[in-house]
Length: 193
Image 1: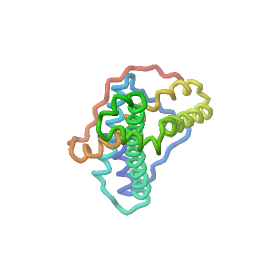
Image 2 (image 1 turned 90 degrees about the vertical axis):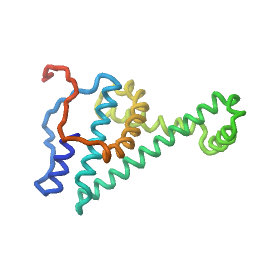
Image 3 (image 1 turned 30 degrees about the vertical axis):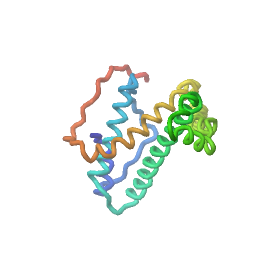
Image 4 (image 1 turned 180 degrees about the vertical axis):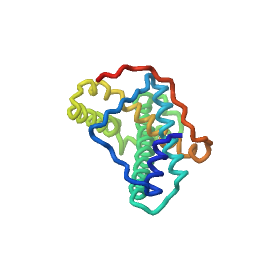
């Protein structure tokens, strides 16, 4: 699905050379215009990554040790993040609709048990603050104050990214791909430089 992943794996697997980057290289990309386009693009990238992992399998190398650590990180962080979001939604529901839940078996007791260890404020701080702090750091590094506004919308995007990272794992082993890439619709843009 994604030829650049496959090419990078091929270079490492067949020991064809080194993959490097020139710092003075300029590259332009076109970001998705809509949330739907973003979801589709990230889905393509993630599916392509997992398909490439499946295709090349494990081989003894430093590349695969680093890749294995990356895979563990992606899966673990995505799963923990989604579980934490689910817990936060449960606590949020219990906080604002608590009286409606008192008649539902196990929900009232579950809410009490969860909030004893994870109150809503702790969940909110744990989920929202770290992302926004990183946004603030990148705002200073890149000197782009607009990031402070965009950072308010990164949380729902992280939910989608985490879901797709996990959702595409089984799909990579079941979906068939002929290896041809089909470009999404692009809009022409003049070179700013």
